[in-house]
Length: 350
Image 1 (spheres, one colour):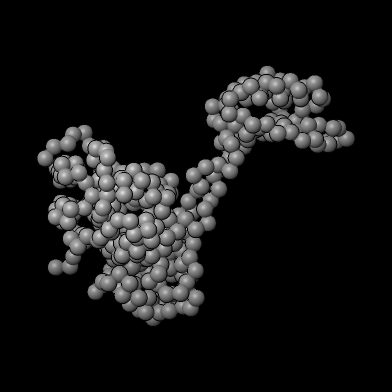
Image 2 (cartoon, rainbow, N blue to C red):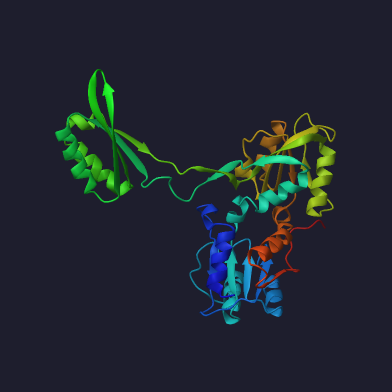
């Protein structure tokens, strides 16, 4: 499959518009075209060991969940490991694609996979994503009233000549007086021109309302998941479920004040990776994430919330098996998709 076609299909699978604004997602390294992809290689972290594995397996595109290029590179030399990754990828004509927080927010993404290990539950995003576009043209709505047909014709004539403005009007009655309510949808740039025109008439300007339009929230996409179990279970049972789902022999546990291993768990707030900001302030019996700062753990525990930490990438890596199966179906088995065997969390218990 041609690289550009494959990247377009990957973007269709999980829109990059779901990614956080600070993130660096999409195609990060592109060999000179044309570039045909026969084998797609999935990993959470693209380390030099994982790159060596990818080259030995002669892959054509690496999908690295975490972006190996995050901060801007000012030079490409052999000095640092991330620069070496770029050099080796280009020398061997291997592309690098990273979805990161787009997969975190996606309805079929990492957090939804993590929630599968809790048991039967209903879940929703803790912080819902916004739609990529506004429901109507423009970012602002301007509304004002006009008395008389002559004034209305003049206003409509002027504002229609402003770029990025759409106009609607309807009749209203106020204090026994017939008026026409004018509603404009416009861009940020057009807004300044509209306001400049309306401010020339005290009659219009005193009756003007300016609304900032919001992109609608997406019900099933967003950061984190708030999961409500169909039936409560003990904390000890929930910990065993988490360990089994993540295939871990142990997790780190901070009991909430007043909680024990026999305390019931009904509501779980989770966030794959680093969950401090996403989980903060969320009402739940249990926080499940990869890592949190010391003081954020203390804050949660002081409020009676138990915290389970599994290390950052341990809450993400198991998703790759599900991702492989979903991408095979999405891409209609047109390419081979394989998982890294060298990819692992950098932390272990000694």
